[in-house]
Length: 151
Image (cartoon, rainbow, N blue to C red; front, side, top):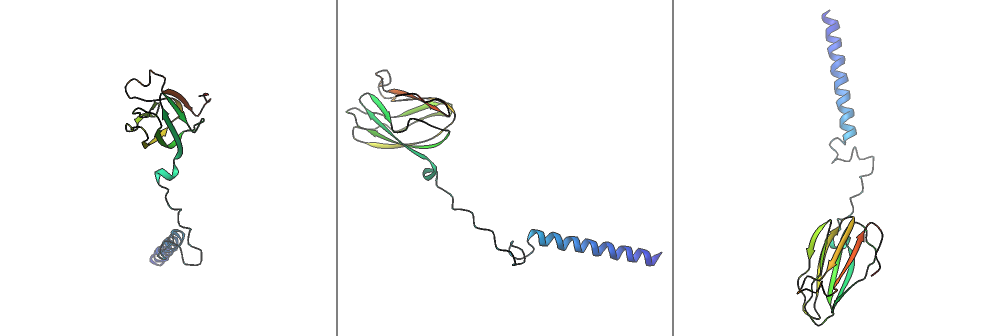
């Protein structure tokens, strides 16, 4: 019985060692994470894009008292608005909807600024929040992910 137990124990240890060796080979072993060197190393991941590079650019022209957007259709995602005050009064751009509410700084005539925003599906109100300009008609609406509105 002692001989049988000893053979069984040795066989079990041999199987365990073989399984461990197979597992290490499958996981890459100690070759820097790339296996035994016979397989090519995986390609490096592409460089990460900056948030601005991945954002869709949109120009918002703010005049007295109108907003003109360079883009008419929007899908959910990141946008980089370049806001230009081409009017004779101070203006700003505010975008309010399902993704929240964000506003550019107030721009003097001839000044430009940026507004980075993530838009979700839904309807957004785009307007000038300065001195009642919204009530003077300085507003528009955009729909993200659905039907577009004519401006």
